[in-house]
Length: 116
Length: 112
Image 1 (cartoon, rainbow over the protein chains, first blue to last red):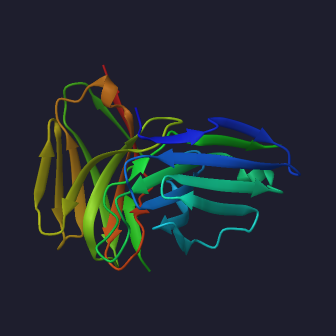
Image 2 (cartoon, helix red, strand yellow; image 1 turned 90 degrees about the horizontal axis):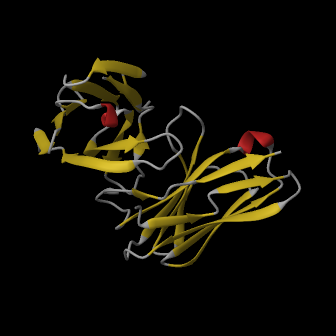
């Protein structure tokens, strides 16, 4: 069983809806990540939080809004999404993310998002 | 520009044989190279990490090599089993506060 928990596992939403994806880890990791993955493609980095501060935003559209309320939680707020945003959204954590590299990533099982 | 390539999109092998997957990179100086396994519809699972000053790493039936001169890593699964069928991703881990970069993955099918 993964130690990174993502909810919901599946989400269907319309283009005008507002929803959130949630991620939780209790391993004491100080870096948390959101990835987007389309079918038969590698995970694509969206955001990195390091010590609860946003450290990397890979030019993600503003309809995706990340939030890190504390060191264990990571949210991704969704608003006015497009059908092409349908994908598997993966949360991950690592001990840290800094000058020495990232180290092992622990991924959650993902949230399968469908935008109608 | 920086590039990471996993040469085979798909690889089919017979049960019991050794599967060898390749990861090449250019314009990159990774501190580490990582390998992950991903099953359909699930998150990747970490398998092995090898440092730039290590030539080889083993874990049970898995072996990873890292050649910084050739800019290549090889991932071997010995005595392969149908349960090893999955997509295997390599990822470069560089210094300087940069995130992991994933290759496109190789989909391995082990046929009984």
